[in-house]
Image 1 (cartoon, rainbow, N blue to C red):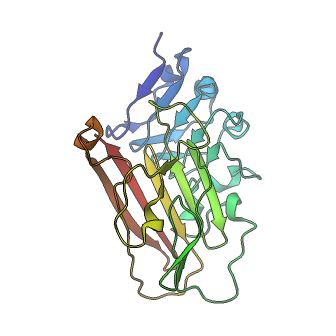
Image 2 (cartoon, one colour):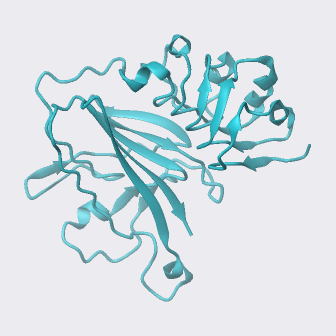
Length: 267
């Protein structure tokens, strides 16, 4: 078959991944994320998937062990298997920047975030607050310090920024040339609002972006999100007629971890 790109994201698919997909020799991008696919993919039926450059199996019900070929793929072959139920015994021993394993293992639902956080110990003092300048530089506004968040990100990347927080980014911008800056947006508008330092840059994601926080003391917390349009110009250009729609979820696990993630759509 001559197909090079196959996207069946959020199509309510269930059951095992059809073995014939692995036989598509020209497949360059495969996205089966956000479905209900299940089963063990560590079998010979799926070994040809290692030739797919951009592989997304995000947020399914996959079980069994993570295939060895998936753990050893070249850095230019992004692989995202976050939010699945793989066996913890198959977790890689090292954290790879092209393989997103965020909450990929069943045991992590009630424990940790795996190998990428293994060397990050919680500070001795209790944590009560966290402020992040998403995609931007460290800045202090009215006595509140917003932490730096300038890691370039990637098409399938889990980034522990600090012992208490980090990001998980899923998605490839099909209409952009891959570069070190494609996942950070820079302002192109005139910013007239107060505290514009928070809006000069922003983190971008093609599919799903997660910010997680850990090591916090049990209790009630207030979550504030700051938004401003910094890419669509308010003039007569065609850019101004577009609109953005995205969903935001806040999830608490065992009262120790707060995860905020957004699924974003551009029209």
